[in-house]
Amino acid sequence: MKKSDGFVLIPAYQEGSRIGAVVREVLPFCPRIVVVDDGSADDTAGAARAAGATVLVHAQNKGKGAALQTGFDYAREQGATFVLTMDGDGQHAPADIPGFLEAFARGDAPVLVGDRMEDPKAMPFVRRMTNRFMSWLLSRKMGQRVPDTQNGFRLYRTDVLPDMSGGDARFAAESEILLILTRRGVRIGSVPVRIIYGDERSKIRPVRDTLRFFRMLRAFDRKVGGGS
Image 1 (spheres, rainbow, N blue to C red):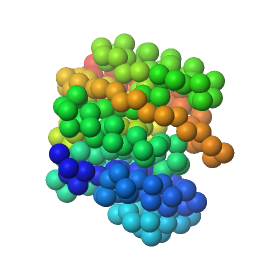
Image 2 (image 1 turned 60 degrees about the horizontal axis):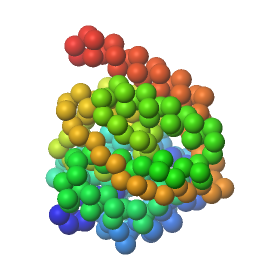
Image 3 (image 1 turned 120 degrees about the vertical axis):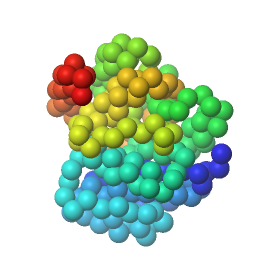
């Protein structure tokens, strides 16, 4: 497997001040980068292009899940072997990309999720507790342990990518993806990654996103129960 067989997918919203640096830091590890500008009002798209990324643009903000779906569709169209997803705010370390590529080349699993929980001390306390709880609950529901289910730093083999067009459009989409994959019998592995928290303002809101997480679980159970 070569790095050129796939690409890094970065959903981005209002990241004009950071996305250029993120793209430039990723380039040494993966030459193909696709940024989905999810309806930003700033220069996210222009900064990403100037740094060397291919940019797909939503005319209006649709949410992270919808941005991921746009990137997944593009991966299928391009015949990519894998998609490695990262956030555009600089909280994922590009230097961890080789760990994903090596584990994927070994055939560890068709889906790999970054694991920050081996040494989570740098993670804010509320986020750490919320993450532990959600990961425990989702792992029980999936029937396989994924230590850091809320981490968007992931590698997917393209042929297992789900169609999320009718699913959760926002942050809970990444949890829903894992549920869909598990239901299909897809094995999910983990790769240790570091934790980076700077002075950026996270778009994650523990209370709001926990409520969305539970709404997604209820909706998923109804969907599965209905046989759809």
